[in-house]
Length: 296
Image (tube, rainbow, N blue to C red; front, side):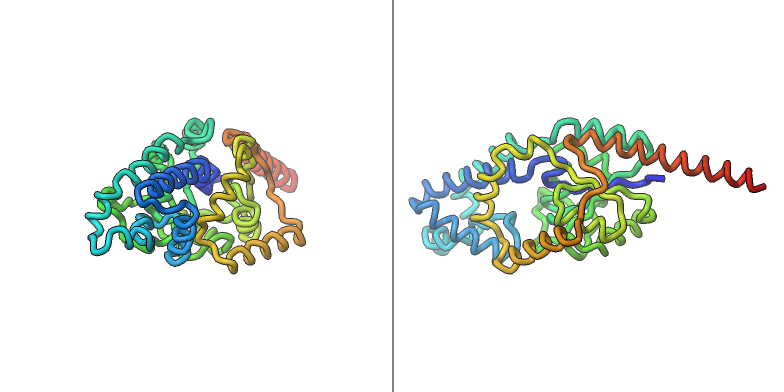
């Protein structure tokens, strides 16, 4: 019996790269105008800060840029936030416009909940990024829990802690995290479906854990993806070592012929998979009972 759907968040329920990159580069344009500093110089500074802090989404990374410190020496954090308010406003306004659910996500989550199946989220993002995107999108009520990475910084006052968030130690594709989620949710590994958008992180992790895996390959994810990815690499917190590790995992997946149990091209296709699995388990149970009667 399928009891639990574990789903990735970014680029599975919504396009993370589709909102973050336009918002970030809009912010970059604004900052470049205010400081009269070339965008290429600011990009290098941002990447250095992101690598130092270990996250491309480190909040207020702008305040740590050498160009900002040089332009406003001796200013407090509060003063800088006020001075650079147009910069942060640009990011937030673009994010608000661009952050949206993929087609059918909310309706599908509602139907899954109606089937009596619990839904939990799992993301490498920190709480203030992972859970609160679900809240902004109005789908947090459909989640029993959201498993997030431990934040490196205190939550802002406007983001109160949520009882739904669970901190996990370990990153994808560590299969121990999946087992930990199963333990927390009181289900067996054979009773879950894992959904994500990455073969090397989501599918590889699920297969190593012994869970049924579903890979989402949305057609609306492909439009302009190469350009967005190139812009992400320019500011990424990933180091050369991180890129080498990703390359190594890709080679392992190829050598071991790692592939998902199912592939979907729209989020609502997960419903048919869950229904098929439920019906299959039901038929197996019925067949088992028939055999037992025959033996008697």
